[in-house]
Image 1 (cartoon, rainbow, N blue to C red):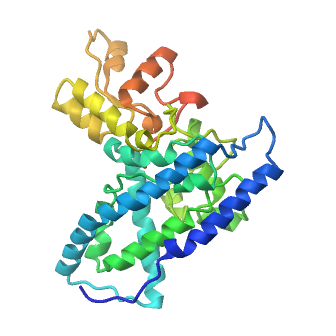
Image 2 (tube, rainbow, N blue to C red):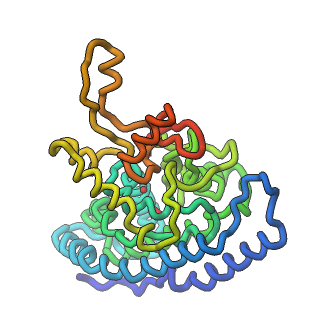
Image 3 (cartoon, one colour):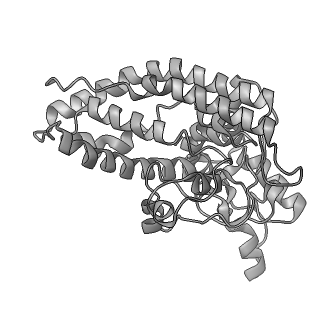
Amino acid sequence: MPSVPNLPDVVLWSIPAFLLLTALEVVSYRLHPGEPAGPVAGYEAKDAATSISMGLGSLFFDALWKIPIVAVYSAVYALTPLRIPVEWWTLLPMLLAQDFFYYWSHRGHHVIRILWACHVVHHSSRKFNLTTALRQPWTSLTGWPFYLPLILLGMHPAVLAFCHSVNLVYQFWIHTERIGRLPGPVEYVFNTPSHHRVHHASQGGYLDRNFGGILIVWDRLFGSFAPETEPCVYGLTKNIDTYNPLRVATHEYAAIARDLRAARDWREAAGRLFRGPGWRPPVPGPAFGPASAASTAPGTVPGASRTAGAAETAETAEAAGTAEGAGPAGPDPSMSAAS
């Protein structure tokens, strides 16, 4: 593989800033905790410790997953005749291209359950602060196929890794409630704390919106944008109630395993894996008219991608008499999973 310029490790260089900003945010909550009944979630020691533990664990597991990913990317890069030169003037277009494919990777990790099982980790906290940005999955082997087109177009794997790191670092500062809305042009183009609060919310029309990494224009273009209009309720529609990092990392995989064991046939098993996180199979029963047919129709329940297991969610929805995924925050919306 041809050599490339020695690109900096932006994550490593950013660690002091991560620590400083987190300390400042903690102090700000000590000095100005916010209204008791207001939307500010603040910090909780156990929650923050879990988020940090997930982040530290992800460093180890990501190093393992990089071995096969780099091998695949290197092989594909060697096969393609295309080459994008690594110059100062090409880095910005390549960063924008990576951000575009990040949008689709992130969106895919919300609408396909086996991918959501990885990304759900990042949404599992009911707090929203800078430590939430560190709550990263340990099974991040699922995102690499989304970026293969960039390798085929001639982007060097090392440059792709650099762009991914820049995207990750950018998203750190938007995990906060301490920054309100920014000037209109900034809010229109970039992903901001306001937009990302919506992405982490679990209620109503906020569910599964605002997938952009650096830019929010992708959401505006592809119909997944929602503005912040009401206080956000964070977490999953069915929260997992644990601070155990291992359970946080694996709870959705365990739910999928339970659903696969209970599956009646291969179609249901495939649906449990590859349809939306809230999908459920048709319920057997008589079909004497439109009402019966509607009651047994398969599909993904709107807004159910923040659930902690499709089978559990279906039971909760039937008991509550509401759409699946309404969770602690009320009725759902939508469609949907990366940072």
